[in-house]
Image 1: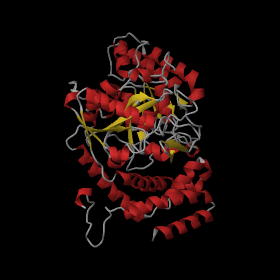
Image 2 (image 1 turned 180 degrees about the horizontal axis):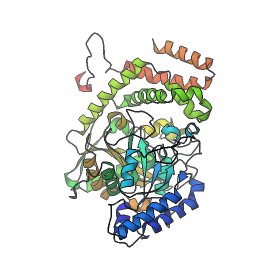
Image 3 (image 1 turned 90 degrees about the vertical axis):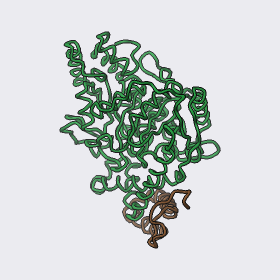
Image 4 (image 1 turned 135 degrees about the horizontal axis):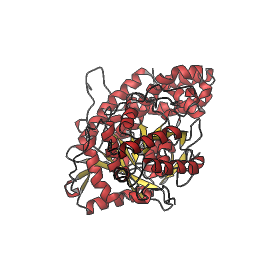
Length: 460
Length: 58
């Protein structure tokens, strides 16, 4: 493996030029899994035999001149919520311990066709119903920089696996922030495309009208590569770089910046200053009813999750972790009229986010209001107040599940303890490719990707 | 059904089902439901509020 290949783009060039082999790259990743998974608990299932076969086949095809594209031979992990043929999709729950997927989810099939190597299935908050990854039948996933902390969730194992060098990217899901929260906590790029762009077929649902899928990876270029493959090769952004001096961003200050850890606020202010210094224009915008988002989100996600789980809550309640079970039970009490109110509020939020994006290239805001929290601590101090960890972790992300707009996280700094801090860009509805182009320009100014990579030889 | 009546019935039912630990969660949900119901953008059968209004339309 090229010792310098930290991103998919870099690795792909090395594999195509045969400066590296997929087998050697996979060996390094599996070695890392052997060394670190006992501590981080990032993986539920390792596909060692199958992955080695995929890597051998990739090397054989590339040597024969059949290079399938930028994912060919690249090790990735998959949140254990996606069906991968021939394996269990556990959703990190005993409820699904006897499950066996007989086909790949369409998104996984697209990655398989592109020649990706599947390292394994990653740990998550049970049924994706949480932001910390603490409630899992397989135990909590842990943060690569501090095992006493959460990597975020629900795609916590995915983030830990990428940040720690066990693979180059991971497939995650995002219902209220479950790609972006762990990406932010672990210093990664996390992409939630526009709602409905990527099929959620073959993915265990949490909330059928809020669920998204997308990648967690180490650069915006890598997010673009994965997004393009997942869209069937139709979404490659133009190679023409965007001049930051031509870009305008809206900062939705009122709600989203009102409850922030001081170090998050400082890193975000610094990122804004760097963008301004590079010539971008930043102005405040308003999403007038952003303060209603949490109530809207709660009534939708609880109702839809309860509908999916009602039968197993009756028949096998003991097979859920206690916290997830009780939160699912809460959803069974939501009245239909309140669900309808939430759907109406959702339309309002969508229009208000559209209005905030009018005349700007994206909204710019923090991705996560706090650094990675300590495991087992339900409340966190944010400035002068104590806040529930779950509420504060969702605060910057859930609005864009409710509205459906595409959003991406970028690392933009770190705490005094070295924990990553991240910004988020929200793009125009149904223009995820445009968001990726804007994000690539912003990344060049605000992100410090190399500093956040924790893989072999770089552990801090 | 008012939020108060709903909360009383929900807590009673949860206790009947052996889930007393639901009580604080239901109390939190009741606060969110109250916020949802009192939001100014709710529809009204009088026709006065036929569509969600932007803040600058109020």
